[in-house]
Figure 1: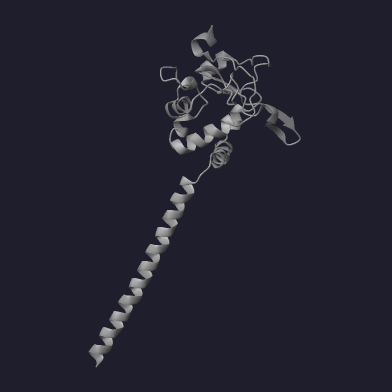
Figure 2: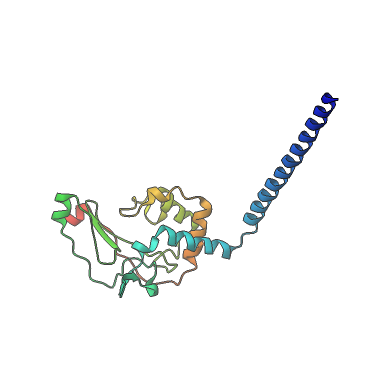
Length: 204
């Protein structure tokens, strides 16, 4: 009699366990299907919104947006958002002797120009104007971010500091596509950023 009860209990436990297992499998399967469906059903506008999130979270505007002064300090000038170093301003003056001697880095007032042992670099125009990335393809953008190449051209010079492309190279192609679509959706700002002044020229 006791053996019979034990067998019945074990059978019941196995059945219940099996039900829970199937329930979990069904839930996981539904979740996976939902994720695939969500990704597959992503619209271009969805990607643009994600691109906006990534660009703002990464902080592209910290260096690529001119600033204006507010009661809370410098803030991005939204009329020139992500348009890079303002080429209408006088060229910033940096003490090259101090930088070369002490190996220090200096920035202009709105962080769109930086100088150091490499020379002087200027934040690029990321808007879809022809003076920015208006003529860029996605491959250009991917080459710039993942390989650190100027203007996204394979045989061009490396991007200069303070551009942290070695960190950004780990972004996925989907992330980069979303960022590129967002940047292409911005208001074009005509602003031809000066060429970098490399260290050899900066000394002369």
